[in-house]
Length: 241
Image (cartoon, one colour):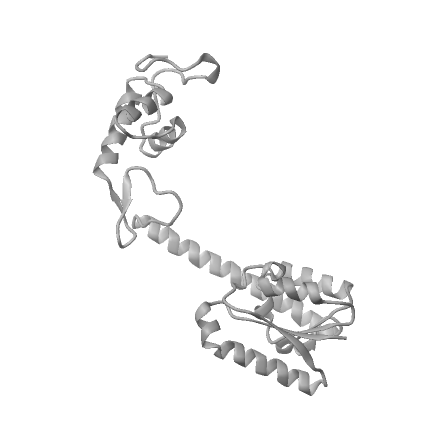
């Protein structure tokens, strides 16, 4: 039988400061002493988010690779190992099937063998997942507010805008002029490919797919004639369909 300990902090600042890790280690060492256990290896996860499944974390992978039937894992709190109830219960089932005991100090000890502890484990796992859902909702609300204030939220910069130092999207005069030209050409019945060619002549490299997205975003996607088909070939610039 080998006893392992698992601790984690989610930010690099906490990892460098060490206080949070130090508290966790002292809790584990005290628990081990009370139960006449000797911890052989401490797996310490520094600056790793709890949203990442345990088996995908650097130290979590090493811990799983080291475990053998009869081993014991001690962790100070539920949220050091898990944030998702589904992930927590899945890992617990794997550990039980492999003959490994999981001791969570905040839940009173071995959650793989004590009926009451297992019940508390299930309840708190669900609570942790609910908290994570609330966090997602808060993030979504913040992003919605930023979107309303024209803040750049990451990803691909929308054509026609540049990103200011404060993260606000500001109109780019040159690209806005190109958008106006796209809408004008579309209104004259030009195909998406023809518009892309016309822009290329002006030194603006956009695919016909990108042209379509820009037009849809700026209300210029409609045209008076049918759209081109790949099998008909590419028309000459200015040809109407």
